[in-house]
Length: 425
Image (cartoon, rainbow, N blue to C red; front, side, top):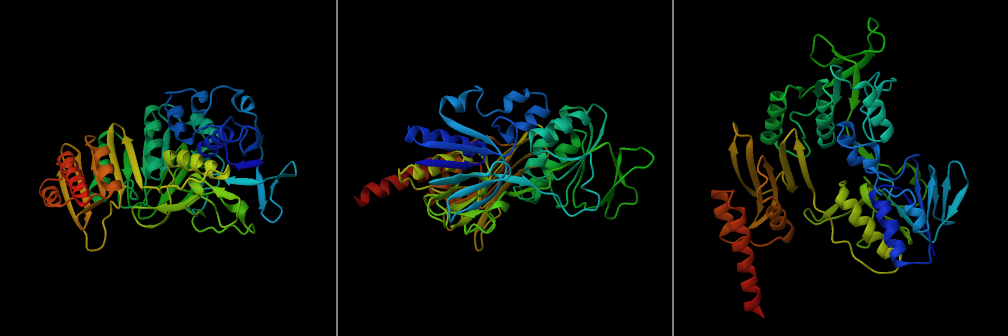
């Protein structure tokens, strides 16, 4: 059996190792289009912050790791997938045939359609090469504009602050991390960052970027409604990512936002599976398909896909939309349907001066979503209540009255449901 994996990130690496554990004699090809050892993109901000060396981003530290497992590592870009002949077409060295194929090519960074944003000296922060370029210019005192205050942008922001730059953050949305936080939490994070000396500008759209003729390599950013342009020595773009699926055009593999999969993570084409950031599978909090682009989900989908590829039928239990973010020491979390549901109810508690906030979202007597800020206690319990879909009974009203009674609600409702279950037996 020949297994081919496209993508050498966490999903692809775990899948390759799992396949070797399941099939000691099968051929395994692990294809990644960067010249680096397999690494974690989520470790790049720690590299920029000076907390780790470049080797600290590597997923496996033994340079002979894959060779020792008889996994063939190819540094190649995939041009297309021919599912009719079971071949992966490479840009440089022909094609690789497969019996089972895993798509784990992850995401790619995208830029908004802004004039001048494609100039030399403007960087994303998505690859090790990006990190090297940013580190060269993000020196103490440099004027840096970070475009985007989403989840990735906020992680990069802390790295830039640690480098001692003069930082301005520009976000089109009306709050920071708008896809993770509601208005209250997003604006609290903004005020926290301003208090740390960062110039944060929300509801701000960049119209164009041009070189400052007086400064040579410096940049001027013209923003909507602003009389004077922003000046920058370095521009870092963190305006989002999308699944890297362009090479699947014409393959017959069904895609939407990402690659559509069934309960075994198999695509619409038999023998072809998907995992990681491009995998659009079941999200049990909504009952719909979704891309769950976080590293724990990448690892788990890589493992489950490999088990199914090797013949061990294993259903994927589905993902849960969740985010945990540490913004300069202020920890925030969001789980499930944090934005609420139609005809649902909610409870919240705010300590603005203390930067503490909790918001719970209910559907009937189930907890379906939550946001916390500055409150790390019981966040695991929150996730458990949402994921287990336990009926809260009387504890719903108690949480509406005081949303901090999470642990009591968990213990009370789970014990009650257990007792009811035993009574029915």
